[in-house]
Length: 304
Length: 304
Image (tube, rainbow over the protein chains, first blue to last red):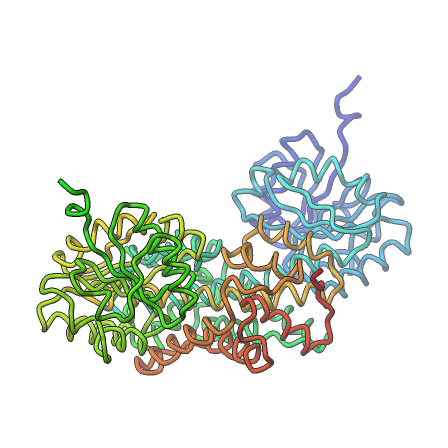
């Protein structure tokens, strides 16, 4: 008996830092993984990792039981599914599309309904945890969808996730949870930038500020994680300013549609926009601190 | 030999929930503690706890080696020190005034200089941790002052603090650290309120939101601590809205003076002001969520 016969086929569409990590986690778990990306370099990395490189979502999705989409936003996800050479052209009936991009829950609902109307399954499954956890198969996945979609996707989810939240029985709920997290995360990065640069303005010992705050009621996950980049003057992007321009933009659009005011998220978005507009869009999101420093003539630590 | 002779004398001025806890911690550690408060009820509680009730800061400070001031703000601290029947009238040369109120660092510097010019010591020592930790002698104290002030105050500080940060050699530095913490804490309470009510607006399972966020990058100390009050619909004040009206007000005044923009803190302050203006000033600071709920017609959990 050939082992190949027992290997379940999975497609990964989008092989950036997150998608590549997820694809290698799937390979390690024994899946037959086909992958594609618009970047030739990304595809080559995937080939070196032992993956089967293909040319389009349609080709990747052919014969796959699970199609994992790890692209940047809703528009790309829609193109991956329903665009030319899209996955929906070739996905087998009963196979499941797992969508990892952060997007407006309304769009997730629409994409889910559109695909399920054709006899395929859709799992709304935004991710969090960064590239290191993606490569380790230790992501947090905030998933919602039908029990059939969960059942079909589960072996692949188990290979990619350290924590899998099952948040509801239809697309959109996972996306909504992710947006709540992004609202908080974005506000906390801007607040951390505002506070640490204000401390610099007052001439405080910034490493001592970090020590005190991380042990106090003013702490946040983001303060603890991002402020060291500011202290080191190292704005190499672990996650870029543009990500929160996008995600707080989605929060603001959702909130405006719902007639729900978000003064904190709106203020934070302006600071990310200022950072992007000042040319820091591809720098680490902690570069928001550089805007505060510019605006107030404060000197922050410079990198090596 | 009478043990009384070896008992060091400490005064505690201000016997609210924090001051009373600190005074009882000092009593437990064996100090002879004199206390006063404008409230007869507070003084009575202190007497029941074994303290020596007196009528004024001047009387409390007489013969005390350490005078601990636990009042609400800079104005009260100044009155305790230099007002009628103030501690500065009677403090012995070389004794130390320990100031716990949160205030503008500039005022802490001024009070410190004013007192030290008269031959007494001043320790800038804002506190954090809440009433339970105050009563347990487990506060966090953010202190700055001369080494003489630290030396004189240390036995009393050890009785009151779980963690004592020594942040610099002059008054104002402790206050500045505290204001950085309050900036973050205030923004995080407002952000937590904005996010959890936005989740309610979308019909999400709020306890599930709490579970997911506290395990995710969107978490903050304040989200974790305050959101349960919203989930329980219980706005009994552990710390009141008015505290952050005051503290974010100080942040905004400091920042304006320093020509440093604080868009996040400013947005958060507006929400605390809206809460106070709507009659929630003495409710728990998580009542900011009730403002978001009012503004968007959202129903939050109601208490028992």
